[in-house]
Image (cartoon, rainbow, N blue to C red; front, side):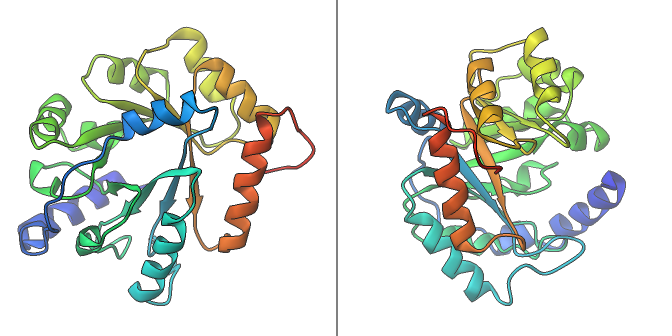
Length: 253
């Protein structure tokens, strides 16, 4: 991922007035932290589903109408506690106006956030530790601004150094993004831990991995909803994750 290119594009989008002109309708916020705690208390594994219209390589949905249809399907699934929706307009063809729709789930506004002007909609938002550092932006000020505007923050980290930095902040949730298997996350959690909710993104190969992560302290799982998934395959994946609680290890996820 070319962060310098992303930062340049984001600055152009901000200067073009995207966030000001298309800011979604303001709504009462829902708490992802509370929903994670509630799910865990009920013996469920909180699932967050990340969905995007496109990425830099391809279009995932033929139209925004088709994307919206999938969003409403996802919104009905009980084990999914939140939808992580990309709203960045150039690389991911997102549209922050989608945040004005009435979803029952918690909506996380996913964007390459480097400026308070981008914090305009959803219930929570994702901050990328490395991106913010590359942009030479004060991470704590972004988190403070989000909290003052009643948003929860999810700070995405990829290694031990970034996890250590995340622990020093007031972020509400920490997301550990894996590129390979669970060893990366285990190495981090064996060195450091936190009382804040931890989410793992990617790297899970089977139900044994899921149980290992739960024992290590992970409180939620984020899945990608992209061109490799049909809605039916997502439902199957959810069933496989549920079975991990019961000790089933037969199928790959």
